[in-house]
Amino acid sequence: MAIANPVSFANSIPPQPMLNIPPPFKGRPEKGQVYYMPDLSGFEETGVTENIWQGHFVDWDRLNMGLVHLTEPNARAHYIAIIQSSGGVIQ
Image 1: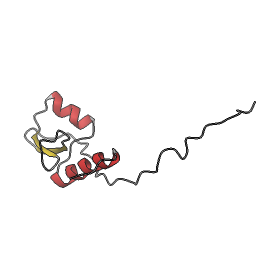
Image 2: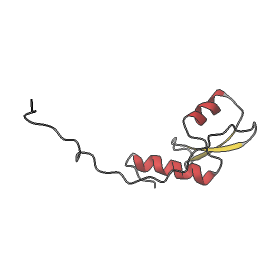
Image 3: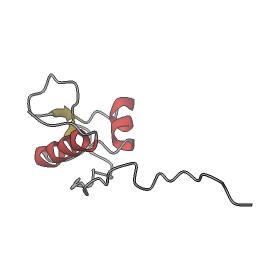
Image 4: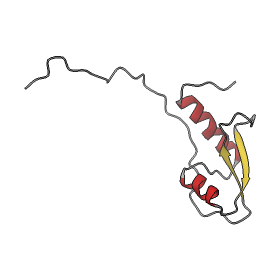
Protein backbone atom coordinates (compact mmCIF):
# COMPACT_ATOMS: atom_id res chain seq x y z
CA MET A 1 0.00 0.00 0.00
CA ALA A 2 1.47 3.33 -1.05
CA ILE A 3 1.40 6.40 1.15
CA ALA A 4 -0.71 9.13 -0.43
CA ASN A 5 1.39 12.08 0.68
CA PRO A 6 4.83 10.89 1.74
CA VAL A 7 6.86 13.41 3.70
CA SER A 8 10.50 13.76 2.86
CA PHE A 9 12.89 15.26 5.36
CA ALA A 10 15.89 14.82 3.10
CA ASN A 11 16.02 18.49 2.14
CA SER A 12 14.57 20.06 5.29
CA ILE A 13 17.86 20.18 7.22
CA PRO A 14 20.65 22.12 5.55
CA PRO A 15 23.88 20.17 5.19
CA GLN A 16 26.42 20.92 7.87
CA PRO A 17 30.09 21.34 7.03
CA MET A 18 32.50 18.77 8.38
CA LEU A 19 33.90 20.00 11.66
CA ASN A 20 37.56 19.67 12.45
CA ILE A 21 37.55 18.35 16.01
CA PRO A 22 40.84 17.02 17.35
CA PRO A 23 40.27 13.67 19.03
CA PRO A 24 39.97 13.94 22.80
CA PHE A 25 42.40 12.18 25.11
CA LYS A 26 41.33 8.60 25.77
CA GLY A 27 44.10 7.36 28.04
CA ARG A 28 44.41 7.35 31.81
CA PRO A 29 45.90 10.67 32.96
CA GLU A 30 48.47 10.74 35.73
CA LYS A 31 47.42 12.41 38.96
CA GLY A 32 48.47 16.06 38.78
CA GLN A 33 48.50 16.14 34.96
CA VAL A 34 47.19 19.35 33.43
CA TYR A 35 44.34 18.94 30.95
CA TYR A 36 42.11 21.31 29.03
CA MET A 37 38.47 21.20 28.06
CA PRO A 38 35.98 23.31 26.11
CA ASP A 39 34.14 25.76 28.39
CA LEU A 40 30.72 27.01 27.30
CA SER A 41 30.05 28.97 30.49
CA GLY A 42 30.96 32.28 28.92
CA PHE A 43 33.34 33.07 31.78
CA GLU A 44 36.46 31.98 29.90
CA GLU A 45 37.38 34.35 27.08
CA THR A 46 39.22 31.61 25.18
CA GLY A 47 36.43 29.04 25.61
CA VAL A 48 38.90 26.74 27.37
CA THR A 49 39.33 25.76 31.01
CA GLU A 50 42.59 24.42 32.40
CA ASN A 51 42.23 21.66 35.00
CA ILE A 52 44.47 19.38 37.02
CA TRP A 53 43.67 15.67 36.99
CA GLN A 54 42.86 14.47 40.49
CA GLY A 55 41.08 11.25 39.55
CA HIS A 56 37.87 12.72 40.98
CA PHE A 57 34.56 11.53 39.53
CA VAL A 58 34.24 14.89 37.75
CA ASP A 59 37.55 14.26 35.97
CA TRP A 60 36.34 10.81 34.91
CA ASP A 61 32.98 12.20 33.74
CA ARG A 62 34.78 14.75 31.56
CA LEU A 63 37.05 12.05 30.14
CA ASN A 64 34.12 9.72 29.41
CA MET A 65 32.23 12.57 27.68
CA GLY A 66 35.20 13.14 25.38
CA LEU A 67 36.00 16.61 26.71
CA VAL A 68 39.58 16.09 27.92
CA HIS A 69 42.43 17.41 25.77
CA LEU A 70 46.11 17.54 26.64
CA THR A 71 46.69 20.79 24.73
CA GLU A 72 44.90 24.11 24.89
CA PRO A 73 44.71 24.48 21.07
CA ASN A 74 42.88 21.14 20.78
CA ALA A 75 40.38 22.14 23.47
CA ARG A 76 39.90 25.51 21.71
CA ALA A 77 39.23 23.76 18.38
CA HIS A 78 36.69 21.54 20.15
CA TYR A 79 35.03 24.63 21.66
CA ILE A 80 34.80 26.28 18.24
CA ALA A 81 33.33 23.12 16.70
CA ILE A 82 30.62 22.94 19.38
CA ILE A 83 29.61 26.57 18.76
CA GLN A 84 29.64 26.16 14.98
CA SER A 85 27.67 22.91 15.07
CA SER A 86 24.94 24.75 16.96
CA GLY A 87 24.79 27.46 14.31
CA GLY A 88 26.44 29.97 16.62
CA VAL A 89 29.23 32.41 15.93
CA ILE A 90 32.27 33.23 18.00
CA GLN A 91 32.64 36.91 18.71
